[in-house]
Length: 419
Image 1 (cartoon, rainbow, N blue to C red):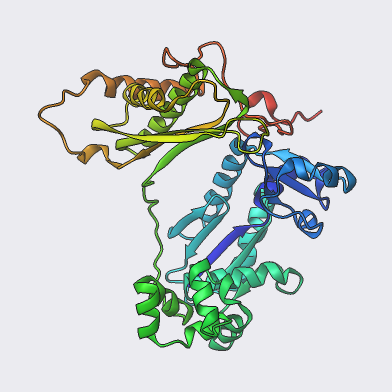
Image 2 (cartoon, rainbow, N blue to C red):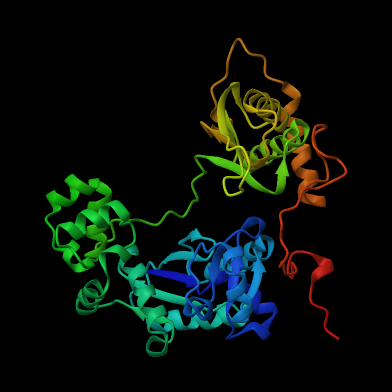
C-alpha cells in the first residue's frame, strides 16, 4: 500500500505556525520580487483570488478584504518541509519526497496493520511536532493514493483528513468521482483528446482499451491506467534524480541600462548555477544567457535576446561559467535598452565523476579545489561571504520583498523570544 502525505496550503501554514493570529483569515504568498500570487489559504481562495494573480492588480482587493500578504520566505518553507519529511521517515524507510510539501510512503510488510489508524497517528504527530496540517491518502498504488488524498482534503469533516481506498468498491467510486483533468499525469493535451473521445472521469479512462492508451499516450499512459486499476506499475523513486537543467533568472526591482550592472548580475547568476550543480555533483557542457526589457512599461524599446555558449569541457567552476556568461552578455547587449530581466541556464548536465575528458583543452586544475573551499566557507558562514571580483563586493542584491516574515527557524537573530 502507498500513502500520499500532502501539507495543506503549505506556505500559508508555515506563516501561521509562528503567527497564529492569521488562523482562519485570508493569506496570500507572493512570488520573487512580490510579483504574483503563488499560494493562497482557503479563505483567500473563497474570495476568488486566482493563482498567478498580479499583485499590483489586486492591491485594492487585498486592502478591502483585509487579506494578509506575505513575500515568499523560502528559508522558512524549506526548513519546515525538512522537519515534516523527517517525521514521515519514522513510519517507513520507503519514502519519496515528491515536492516541498508532498511525499509518497510505501508500507511494505504492513499487511496486518490498520493503515487508516496509522494515517491518523501520522497526521496528529506532524501537527503536534511542526504545527503543519496534512492530508493523507492511502491506496494500493501511487495514482490512487493521489485521488485518496484529494478526497481526504475535500471532505475533511467526514474523513478527518485521512482516506483509505482499501476495497474495489471504494476504488471504483473514487474513479467515478474524479474528473479526467484531475488525474495525476494527465496533462492539458491528453485531457483535451480524452474529453473529445467522451472520457469524462478517471473510470472512463480505465475502461479504455490498453492498445488505444499505449498508442496515443505511450507506455507512461498505460502505466497510469494500470495504476488506477490498483496495480502498482508506478514505483517509488526513493533516490531523488539529479536535475537535468538548472537556471537562475531574476526580474530587477527597477531597470538596468549599463553593461557593468548587467555584467555583475549575469556573473552572479552563473555562479549560482555553478553552486547548484556542485551540490548534485554535476557539470555542464553549455550555458544560455538571456536579457529582456520590460514588456509592460509604455515608452520603452522592446528587446529580448539570448545566446548559447559551448564550454571547452564540462565544468562546474564558478569562474569558468562566469567568464562565458559575460562573454555571451557582451554579444547580446545593446546600448540604450532598459533591461528588466536577465538569466543564465546551464545545459548538457553530466555527472562530474564520469564526465568526458579532452586531450586538447587544458582544464584549470586548481578550480576544483578552490570551488570546494568556497562551498565549505558558504556552508559554514552563510552565502555571499566570498564573491568573484566582477561581482559587487559591497552590495548583495536582494529581491523586492516588502512583506517578508522572519526566518523563525534558520536565523538565530530572528527566532521567537519568549518572555
